[in-house]
Amino acid sequence: MPHFNVDDKESYAMTDVTSLISRIDRELEAEVKKQKAAWAEVAQANRERAARLQRYEKVAQHIIELVKPRLAAFVDRFKSLATVEPNVREHTRAVNLTFASHLAKVTLTFEVFPDVEANHVRLECTMGIYPALVRYDKQSVLEFSLDEVEGNAVTQWFDDRIVAFVKAYFALVRQDSELQDHLKDQLVEDPVTKIRFPKYLASSTLEREGRTYYFVDEETRQEFEKDLAVNV
Image (cartoon, rainbow, N blue to C red; front, side, top):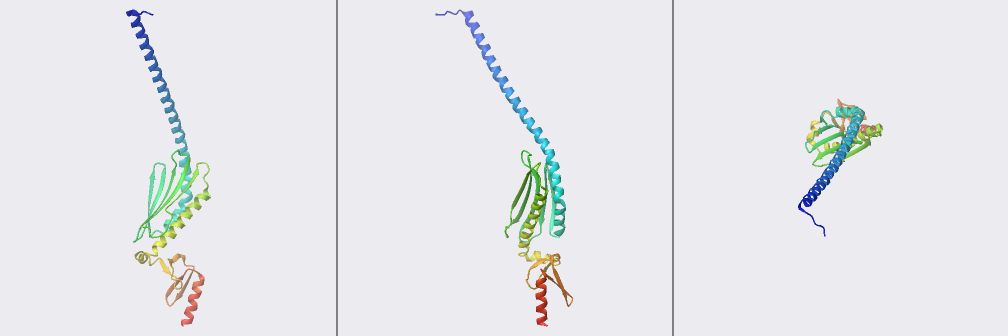
């Protein structure tokens, strides 16, 4: 049976503590290396994302230039009814439009922004009519990878969103007698179909006894003239 004297026991104890400290230090070093590797990975990912964001900014500007003349034409057409508020945030470009109505709150927003990893550019259109007195598409999203933006697809999507909004808005206008009164100098009514529409959309007009009649098409004008001839 082994026999330890006091000195041997103390020597063994010190060796055992040294071994423990060495193990602890190895674990700490391993953890530090692990965290350093994780930090380096995050730092590299951030550098790559920053580079993609620089590319995104150029892509976003290209998209904005594509839709800017279309937006300007739309706003000009509705200048008496719409207020426009640009909204620029980090990596996000948006325009908020608010439209006149006595029946509902009517808004239209277009946004361009990157996804979380900045691998894609997203275009988003949000319509709001509250309360929802007419049917409308609340939201539409178009997304491309940064290297695959299709200009024709962008403008087609934008045009479709504008037209969809106009349909919904004028369905609301038809219910809003106060707004119609406000627009009396801009809206006219076809005397045959009783359809109210913007004056500039008249496909045909007719002057009679100092009054101008507006028609949605040539056929209703001809029918109106026939009725006038019968009633003379």
